[in-house]
Length: 316
Image 1 (cartoon, rainbow, N blue to C red):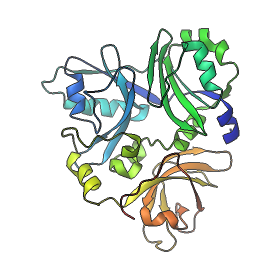
Image 2 (spheres, rainbow, N blue to C red):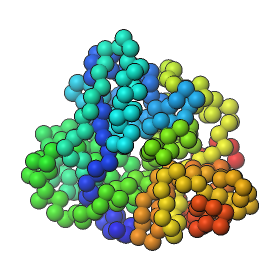
Image 3 (cartoon, helix red, strand yellow):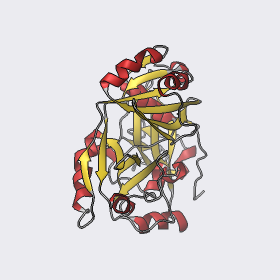
């Protein structure tokens, strides 16, 4: 689908996201000690981003998380869910918290100018700001950062509820799951996948620019390194938005022809755009003004594009 079509209005089934439900009276304090963001002060009407790091500060996963009636929900790629759920469970120890698979029957992604009006017909209202959350008899509705100049929404629901509400969404263009990935890339929201685990500290993928790191909370795995990167000027890399006339995938390396012997960055996320791929690509700050190529020094050139938020580089 073209950017113009996505900007107009679309709906896509999002089949590659899973959900971990964490329940028990120590849920908030347990997760607060594990994630890069504040969990203890999370409100019922909001969602947040967070990272889960190794002791060396490298991201194992990124989550979108929110409160449910009886705990906290962590959304992440299905391909990572089982391993991350097992790893977190190992650290529960004496805490009264239990993790379980809570992936809904259906997750739908909405975007474009017409999406908000369609969802208002179903829910009566929609969250006014990005990272707002609405609970309804039809499911959970999350508003996410804009893409293509329009809001994005995730609706977690059942097949029966979606079928009942579908006439309200008839004006929206059905789209493949890749369209949702493309919109997330244009929103500048990174997602760690199996190909990029342990490759980045949170700031390398702009996570703190999206509110996904709280530097005032207590300790969590990798906290010292993440804080040092923020305050001691150690960060030399950021994630940019780019297009390339070639197929690309997470984990692909990018090169500066002026220094062809080693990569200057790595693709974080990629989605087809009809003429190649759009990317979130992590790279050296110095490479932001270079002729960066995909895969090799003589590979397809990247065309950098403007992110929807300022790329507040720490070291220039």
